[in-house]
Length: 59
Image (cartoon, rainbow, N blue to C red; front, side):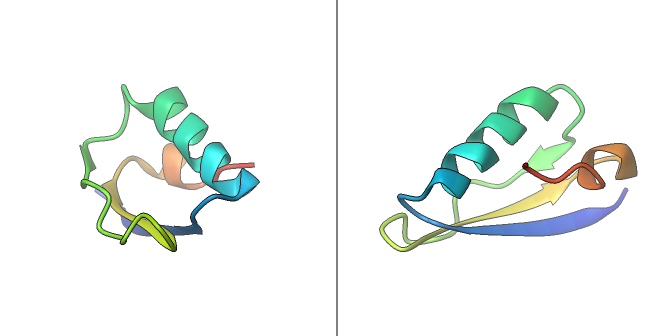
């Protein structure tokens, strides 16, 4: 299964897009790490998911 790292600046509109993307694809994401970022500067997630999910990044 394809893997990806998602890194986003915290406290930005993009952070909310990532959270919405995770909720949208929750049923198809095989693995989602806990937030490995500090949370004050960045959010960082490791994701295993089908290509159809990873090819549709948060937008």
